[in-house]
Length: 153
Image: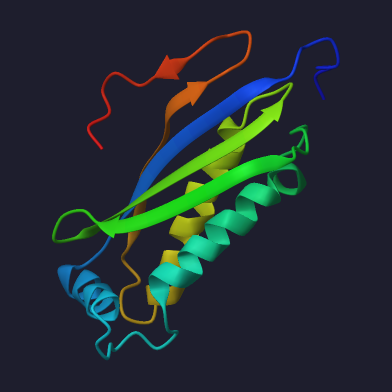
């Protein structure tokens, strides 16, 4: 691991995004769930499970990514929303006060939330695709702020 003991603690935030591309019929079933209607998705609440999976993954990033520092996270927010007729957008915002950033935690949250969507919907759509997982913004630390200029989400 990188020695960060000489760095000062600062407020740090990272935002990551990604999406799951699926058949329009699969997204229609997720929309039915969102509206409180019966759905043909056999595993239950897709968005609730994916949100929880993303949150739990952010907290366990150091267990998943070698050499990643374990961090005390101040906040984790994972949101999922239909984007087009065939994709579900995922965004994670992670905050801490520490000596190293939370980019990996935000990226891990998005990735695992996307995997959970796949798992929850694979019975009806094995052709789903996880796409465009990326860091869109980070603040804090010696390297300063970063914002992806080409991000439209």
